[in-house]
Image (cartoon, rainbow, N blue to C red; front, side, top):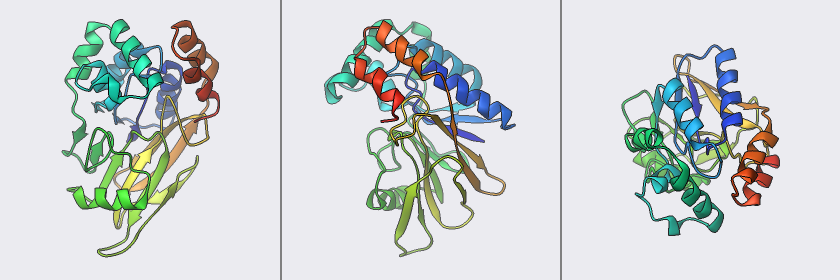
Length: 242
């Protein structure tokens, strides 16, 4: 099964990840939300997710486009991108996003856009946040997005300290014991210093997790952002993964 998150209107990155998933022989794709926001191809990304993803969540950038979150809670660049997306997204995309939840607890792992405590807003970037999230989870393993950082956290047993780290390309971990929170990283706007699109291969029969990165034509996504009149920094950050 493939876990992916934070596409953010970046169609070239999304297509590259889906091609890599297909080449890996994975037959299920679960998306943890934020299909839109920042990038300039929201409709194309939503349509592709609707076509190929067996499961998809909604994130805070999706929700602000739907009018369920106040755009003033966003940073200036994010708010400008959200407003542009609201003005340009089509009705089919809105209908698809409006039907999505921000968490899913009906599978072998808990799925959350942001965190088990707050599926919309909380960033899980520290052991303290991860431990609180583990306490809130109904299962042993949870997957989150939102931060755009590929990482993992583990608690080996009751009362044990939580350990964790970032997950560079090729990181492989056995999740068969203990409590875990994993983040596949960002497809469309990575923020861990690696500009390549990220996804996570999770083999549920063996509980083996493998983090993967994929090259994609960054300049295509950047040019689309610039052509749309969106903030230039949203294009520039794609080249550096920040």
